Image 1 (cartoon, rainbow, N blue to C red):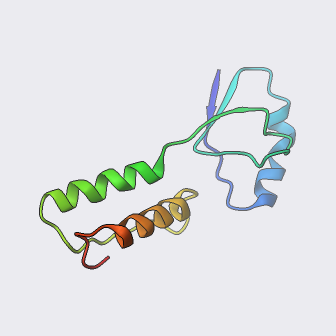
Image 2: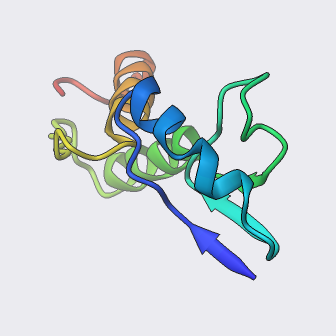
Amino acid sequence: GLLLAPRWTSRAAEEADYGWLAALDVPTVLMERRPRRGSALHALDSVCSDHWYGAHLAVEHLTGLGHRRIVFATRDDSPTARTLRAAFAEIAEAHPLVESW
């Protein structure tokens, strides 16, 4: 079997991998990537972390320790950074104990 975490930062990058990924003759699972619905790769198995829940757990842990101001830092070139930032922003904004983020 093959576990893959492609570095797709755009639709074009994903589409560029269609040919060789679709031609693989071993069981393949995409990790931390979800091909677009209807795309040539959508039939591949894929698994992703629950980033929203992870951010929720982190904020709960920090506020449980008494922290009220939280800084969240991610790399710009991480494919999951947008998802993590959006989850953290939603959670921190709604959390009654977070004063600043």
